[in-house]
Image (cartoon, rainbow, N blue to C red; front, side, top):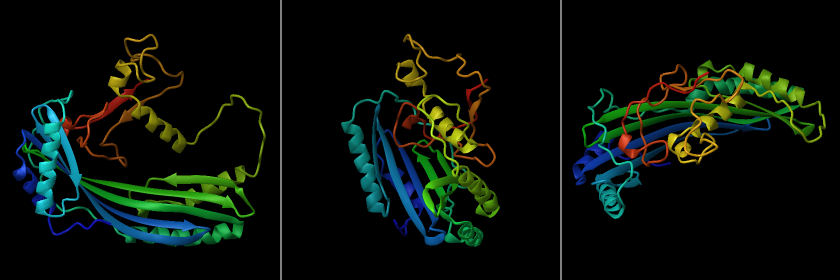
Length: 320
């Protein structure tokens, strides 16, 4: 657990920007408040609440970039991180993605403190789990799993005047069920509830029992290719991997599955499957809301540190 200290985020940001002597400076602060609940053998085991902070400074000198992180506990450390990032920029070569920093103004909520969660978000879930544990023991099953609720508050500030803030709520629950008389039989269910008061635990445990019942029937098949029907959650996991592989540069440079097989191009325009398939990302999607602007402390094939603060909108990666 990293204490948040007496220095507020606004003061931390202002101190860093005032100390900067670089051509451009970005300050990114992320404070995380997380509550967890765990259980095993149909018994509650542990719970807890943690807070942490990440404080990073990106300094631009000419076309070179330096990035250094810390906790930003006090003004001296903040100034030290700024100086270290400037030294790193002087020692690095020109960045191939060098560009002017994004400009903008301060949003109305920028000075607000970090959002906080607590173990209390699981009050209703804990009661539901107690009932589920009793039912599982009566059936001869054992339940294992965990629940997490996280509020991640990010502030982005730039020497160009840009000031943005975002609170990202994230919820996770995963439950594994095992047959007490045959621990090799197991099944899994999970969900991503942002608000645990709306979680339908009964629906999850019913699905878990259904999958456990399936595992009672065993068939030995010879090696070969078989049609497999995946549940929506497994399909979604595969789609996450797919979208993470759809960066343009690797495709153009022949380093991805989306590069033209013959070289010298991409597979843009090809049909990937005979089934209807659309793959879309949208930070404004209900129940899946995410940061509507870019934040990153490192350039990659997908993002550039020079694009910090750039707006993010709906993108169609695949369209049938």
